[in-house]
Length: 152
Length: 400
Image 1: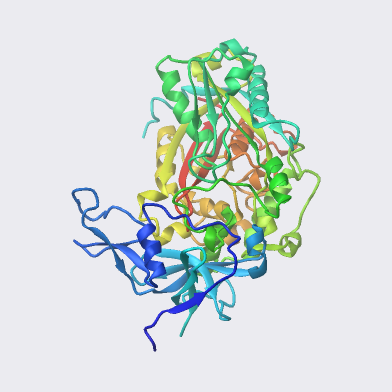
Image 2: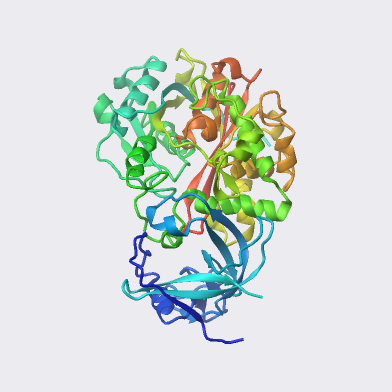
């Protein structure tokens, strides 16, 4: 299996809410643009966080000084999901219904996004599938969003 | 354990409710009217009210456009303080906890605690632009909107889904909660769904919104305002309406765990809140005559029934399916119809119903010999994916 990440390039005009990029997560979004999924890791004990946090396992002085963004595996498994049937926002009309999944990363934290591809869970009791991150580039907008694909 | 010295020392002496769609009124005017009704209900005047608290959901659970004014100014209260408290749907419980410190020190004699919303009216506007549900302002730190996490149901439905996957709970069992609350609402002329009975088939046939949730798993979008007057027990005895005593309060926070702690998708932050509230009141679950649980969605009711201990974890589905929480059941829950079938004013919906039950004013839905009511608040989404963070537990009683 290739280690090259899967990338989707979208040149569609963005008519949905913009990602909420701020000082706390701009490094994470920069990582996505480079097709890397970053988690916030403690250099002292190796605990991974997403999003940013203070390492709860020990003191780190000055504030969060021993934390850094590092590349994660981009792999995980579906913890829970739902299937959106209602169009809450007009920008999502074309893709509804869509599966919005809560993914348990190999590194521990839960992250959510939608699934790409034809494989979706068959019903609400069907969870635990392996997934990998897919990078969806929006070059005209200057950001990349993570999606997930179910894999064997 | 003896009860805490504060238990039964504070009481609610007035209640004001503005219910139903209010297309022609601002939140400010609804707020003032609810407060005026509460003051009148206590047979007090605006000049007797020396403290005012405004309950708003800002600070979690969907920021709405704010406004700059105070119902205390509109009504001409004689208040020495006015401020905003609230976290998502956790409003009344926090309002009571806050007001106690002013009453306790003699800073205020009568505190008016009020919350008002115009969610329904605002939703009619945003609907014209192709949006559905409540209009929210963008929140810093919120993850999911760009990837389709657009409304509370976008992530709350994971809790239902997770409980189903772990414990085998079914959509019909969640629907049994909606059916029970609707049966209660049909006994409450103030409820939005009064006169509109529903069956489990109605639930199953209602559109899927965010599967596993059907439309009838989801709370209402409402306009309205609820206010109540809190004072000390000695003053309460001189008021005309039967006092409703605050017997105990407790608080829990999901954020005390790592926010991706998996149990928080099948549990709520109940244990600490429950133990604090029941400990102060020196009561047990057996003393509770009815519950007014925060029910933004059906699964939250299921979780609380399990987390408080009315049934074992994972057994909430069969428990509600047996009819335990509806009229004639072993533990009446959301006897006014709740957020699902009465109206959604956060935990004020349950607070108003608790007061009516304890005063014996609940009409056809009155729980017999209702002496103790457990009411809860819930709200304040963490990041997203995020379950609501805060849980507030308030025990109210007919006797000190």
